[in-house]
Image (cartoon, rainbow, N blue to C red):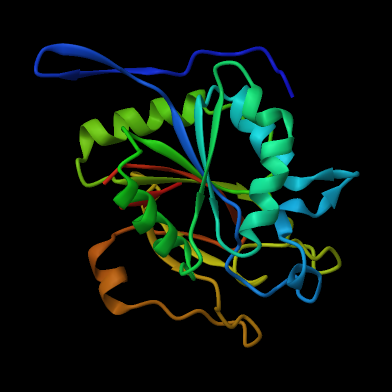
Length: 241
C-alpha cells in the first residue's frame, strides 16, 4: 500500500497570496445500482474480493500513489461494514494520506452524494471523483495539467472526465457504466463531450442524434468504445475526455 509519495498539492493565486491546496478525492463506496444483486444484498460491492483483496483497497492504493492527499469515502448502503473495515485497516494510519468516511442513508445517486459532501464544506478545490471499485495505475499528472489549461480557456469547464477505450468484441463482455452499450459524441477539437447515451439501441444498426447537435457542431467524433474511468471536478459541474 505504501507507494512512494509524490507531491500533488497545487498552488493557486488568491488575492496575490499563494495558497497550497491539497489534492482531494471523493470515493463513492456505493454504486447506486442493483447490478450485482443478490451478492450485494448483504455485502457492499467495494468489499467484494478481487484476488482475495477488497476492491476498495485497489482504489485507495491508486489514489495514494497518484498523489492524492485527502480522500472522503462516501458510504450509503452497508455503510457500517465499509466504515468498520476502513477503521481496522492500515488506511487510517497512513502518513500524509488522510481517509475520512462520510455516511448518508438517504442518498440514492452520485448527485445526492455530491450534494451531501458540498453541504459538509470539506472540499477546498478541484477534486478527483472515483468509484470505490476502480482498479488503475494511471498517472494523474497529465490529466491535472490538461484540466488546468482547459479551465484557463473556458471558465465553464467544471468537470473533466477520464475515459478509456473498452473492448467491443461481442465475445468479450466488457463491463461499462450503466449498460454495455454506450455512445459518445465528442468535439474532436475541444474534446468536449457533446452527447452521452448509455441506453442506445444498436440492434437496428442506426443512431439518432438531435438536429441541434449537428447544426451547432461542424464536426463530431462518434465513439462506441469508451468507458468512464474517473472525473476531475470543481468544488462548486463541459464534461470532457
